[in-house]
Image (cartoon, rainbow, N blue to C red; front, side, top):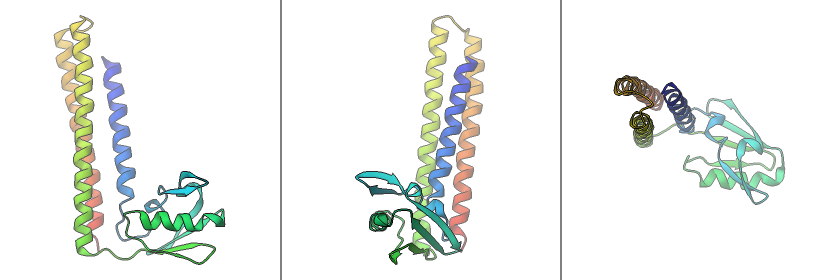
Length: 184
């Protein structure tokens, strides 16, 4: 019973960490290497994360510089940035790619806030599905007489508290991102 609850807690924590990484890729108006580091770039016929092909730095609040280790990948990196939904325009000088991160318009901010809210709702569903899976496992244990009905009730209560805690955590991550998006 404790093992089931521990496994679910680990899965919920991993889910929140993934949410934080995903939301970090939504740009706020400040240049950050996180915005582009996981873009998939076609390199030698294989989609490869950008951070494995180039050094990415943010020398200023509104500038990203991408310096590929192989100059032959410059065009592919540029294409990947243009194809992404980030709305960024790369400038290729033959050695490095510079990206000026423009300030967000109010319309774009609202659009990004909607994206954040929908992602948070998906996260709530994921967490509730994990809870349901754990309850199913606990009921199987109770049905096979490995735990009593009282144990099932106590475990279900603990599971609900765990679920509530992680849903609150997901909502807080979303609120933090919304606050950053609303900053001008």
